Length: 250
Image 1: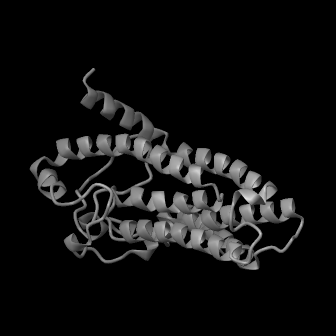
Image 2 (image 1 turned 45 degrees about the vertical axis):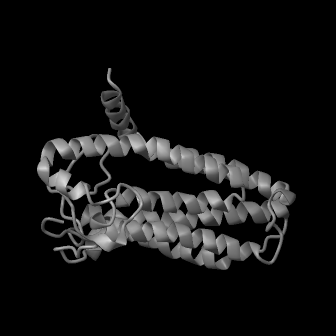
């Protein structure tokens, strides 16, 4: 099998199981975070007054990644930029909004979301390995997606892709979306992201306090986790039991 076909085959397989990557990152990150808490000398900021600022910085990076996802999904039509795992879906080719800056904005957003979590471990080498692993993993997924789009949209895809970078945004290319921003679509599609981030950061904070036997919990994280958790339950009910979040073609 030629390398091109092999890359596409690997990308299709990884696309189907890409939801497992965060679980791997979370498991390894949790182990390393516990190690950092048990051996504070391994991280220069551990136990200092600057530790809380570093944790908030990591949270901001993760929230920035979620912001990229929101800014992408909120302007897309139905059957594009979805969370499907069985197969590629694209009724239309997105070329405006975030897609005028970078060809794979959702994966940029995912990278930032998990980069913040990775940094929270305080382990420099884990962050380096994570970046390398993410690149190798998603390079194949992006290759498979682009092969699918190239076959489906032909010259239209080639004209768009030649000026839009794959992963590092070029802000000079920005083109306003033809669609209005849909908060309903965001609440329906991205409702779990915000809750998941605050829950992960809260779990790490609680683990750190328990290991250090200080019990000085971050009440901001507790409050936000509670608020976003309750919001998640309400939105999940609205999505599955009502039509309140439905919009035509979104």
